[in-house]
Picture 1 (tube, rainbow, N blue to C red):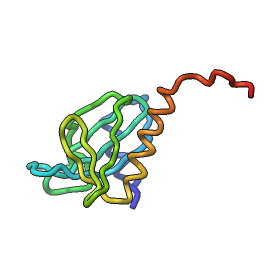
Picture 2: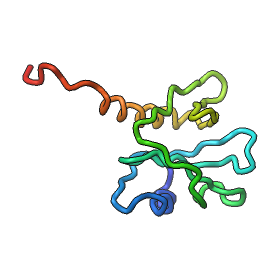
Picture 3: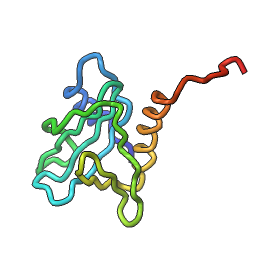
Length: 120
């Protein structure tokens, strides 16, 4: 289920005013005091927000801000879909695998060399 517009609006307050949200998805951090987080992939950064213990959907504080050129995948979909970012394993619902892939595809397209024959 897509993240609601209300949650996206709450997440926006943690971004720079001129930044634009591209993707938002929830994840769980195993063995953490505050396991629920939101990944906010914007034009300039990948921001991870903690949702706190009481309200698992509403972002409460910023955990980290990462460069936008960081790949989130690959997603390991063996038992529970998960990916590792800077040594931390994040579990996601199966429906968000395509969101992670889409976020990574945006990076890959930006990093690809220019088309040598653009007129063909």
